[in-house]
Image (tube, rainbow, N blue to C red; front, side, top):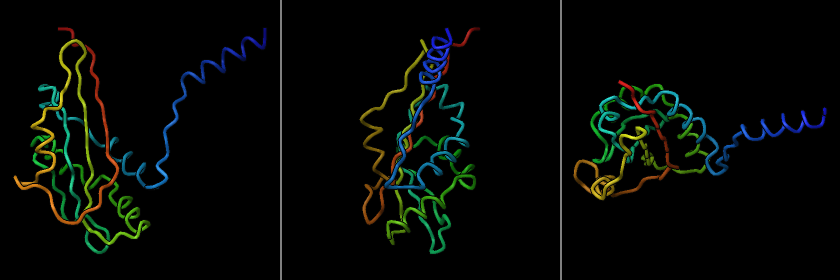
Amino acid sequence: MKIRIIIAILLIFSYCTVFGQKNDEFPSYEKFNSSFAAHLKYPAKLQKKCATTITLMKVTFDRSGEVEFLSFSDSAEPEFVSLMQEIKDKLDFKSIYRDLKTKQKELKQVLIPIHIDFEKMDECKSTITSANLQKAYRFAGTPISGEYFMYPALYGRYVVGRTIE
């Protein structure tokens, strides 16, 4: 009887446990990703439109590792850009800078792909269009060029249950 109870408890805990993969190539990635997830609240206007966000965030660092400039590719919705400008001081950009230093990269520009899916069950599912993808590599209408470092992507998914009115 005791063995059955122990086995049942182990099965419950093994079923509920989730393991994330550690990014050994970028040891500070988890810190930045956690700060991003903790402070991002997908804008209501984008939720209503059931919009997917797929964009590149361009971060320019100064010599001390402070964020000098933050911009987004043309595919980013204005509401998303506004939100990111509001929360940028809460995000752990220092962790990205530490990874750059660890990799001995002197590049001050970093590109971070961001992909956020939004879905309302039985109402809408976000989609990525070819126009989204084309705009993802343009900044102010100009294709991206120059030297930059590509950081690992941030991915988020919001699924909302059906609203009962």
